[in-house]
Amino acid sequence: MSQQNNAQVPDNAETGAYDPAASSLADTVQKEVMEELLSIRGSIDNFDATLVYLLAERFKATQRVGHLKAVHALPPSDPGREKAQIERLRRLAQEAHLDPEFAEKFMNFIISEVIRHHQTISATHAENGN
Ligand SMILES: C=C(O[C@@H]1C=C(C(=O)O)C=C[C@H]1O)C(=O)O
Image 1 (cartoon, rainbow, N blue to C red):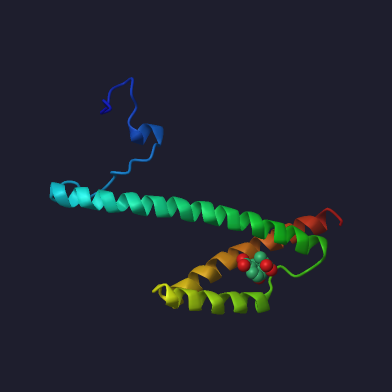
Image 2 (image 1 turned 90 degrees about the vertical axis):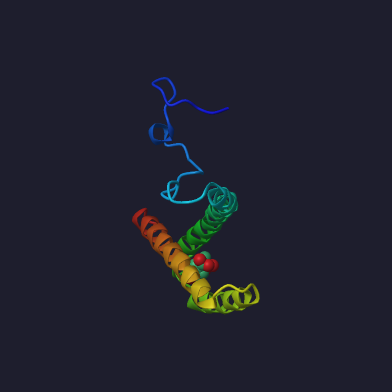
């Protein structure tokens, strides 16, 4: 059923609801091309949602590591572990036809954020006198 934009029914801009058809191309692209684009974008949306859930679960696990390290006075980063992870992920990326340079950059970006969290957890732990 199509939604009417009137005072009773707020549109996406007002509700903040996601519009999967949002685009700046609507007026410049043929109808069939736009349909194919939207269909592919449906898959991209599913992948992006999966990435967010995966990252959320990964950060839950790394937060646990951060608390364990703080309790046992271990350093926030573990360069030996990181080196092994990067080497493994570069190999996996190659096999999956993903640019290994990109995989390494992406992994380093995530790891640096995790280390920042671990530093915060460690500082909070120290402040609390444990
Ligand atoms: C999560 C850890 O802490 C840091 C973050 C890592 C990661 O995000 O994978 C890996 C090594 C550490 O520098 C860990 O030591 O396992």
